[in-house]
Structure formats: structure tokens, C-alpha cells
Image 1 (cartoon, one colour):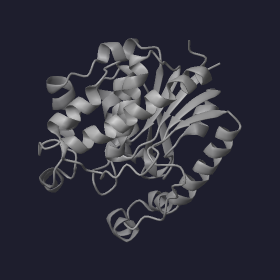
Image 2: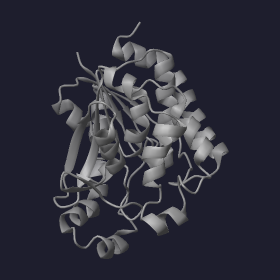
Image 3: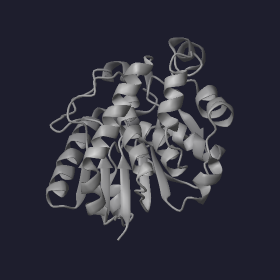
Length: 283
């Protein structure tokens, strides 16, 4: 039996996921592999590095720092979340990312990006948490319009949520027959076509395949949710989701709001702990 963990994105809704992952670590709930999309990749890497509390800690501390996230950063660099600060200064100097533990942890950790030229999902297996992996994680979380494309080996990459928001089928393909899926939307949520498509069509016109994927994202997302519910009813997946809308913006500069959503995640994980352990056959 291979146990897999799927982490949906959702910008600062990811604080819900961070709370769940901290409870998992505190209770020694481990997986053979995990896949993170966008915020799920950014916060999921601290799960592989076994750093309890890191995601909520640095977000609360730096959410009002213009170097971390600000309109100024977007205007001057093209990245709403400052790339140099977020992916270098912060993990290397201010809240150290434990690459040693990351690389020694046997759990496979994948991130999802979207190839701007093809419009297709690209999956990368992180190995050591070093510069190359950090670039892939950054690419996975580089929301169109809010961030520049990330170029890796000649490929222009962007937010993984555009092409595969909840990669349960990818994990099935990789042989994970027991999956825990963490969603950041409540049950019954239905994604609609993006109101930003007219702007996107002008901003990203050099990437027609990406635009095609983006325009159909809501269709694929909703079909994936239907598939997940079907698999959940059959006992083939265990899903953790918030009970109601988390009501937090994509950008949140109020530490109390970040803490609120994080604690919702912790509470949900604690409520589900026995069910999770039973499903994963953890004593």
C-alpha cells in the first residue's frame, strides 16, 4: 500500500492546509508521497522538511513587509510576492528552510506547474530542496498576472492550478492507492469561469495554448471534484475540507486573519484525526 497526500492551492486559503499539516507532523502521520499545487507546494515543502509551525510563523511575521508581498513589489518587479525575498532571503536567512531534513526525508514530494507554451501540466519531483527545487516551487505558485513566468531549462512555467488544481489522478498514476486529499474549498463549491479572462487574453496573448487551458479550467476543476466525491464515497479517498468558506483573500496582510484560518485547519485535523489514522492504518 502506498499512501499519498494531495495538497490543493488557493493562495492564503493555504493557511488551512498549513494548520492540518502541523497536526499531522505532531501526530507522526506520514505519507510515502505528496503532491502540492501552488500554495500547496509552498506550504507542503515545510511538511517534508518537518518544520512544525514554519508556514504560519513566517507568514504572520512578514505579511506586512513590502518585500514579501505588496503592490510596490508587483509594480517594480512584476511579482506580487517578491521573488528574491520570498524564495531566497526568507528561507536562507530569516526563517531557515531545512534542506538537510528535506533531502533525507524518504517521502517523495512533487509540485505541479503549467507549461505556458503547451498549456499542459508539468510535474517535478523535488530532490533536495535546493535552488532548482525552489524554482519549481516558485513556478507552481506564480499566478498569472500576479507573477512573472519562471524559466527552467528553457521552459516558461506558471501556476500549476491552471492545468491540474487537484492532482489525484496523477497520484493514482504514480501508484498511490491510499490518498488523503486536502481541499481549501467547502463541499458544494462550484468553480465558475474566471472574470479575469478578458484581461488574461490581452496579457498572455503570446501563449494561446495556456489561454485555452485557462478558459477551460473551471470545467476540469468541477469534473475533478465530481471524481473525488465518487472516489470518496467508494472509500478510495479521504478528503479533508473546510466546513464553510474560509473568507480570506488571495493576499492577506492581517496576521490575525492568517492565524484564524490556520487554527480552522488545526481544529479540522484534530477532529478528523481518528478517521485519518484508521484510513491510513496508523496506530
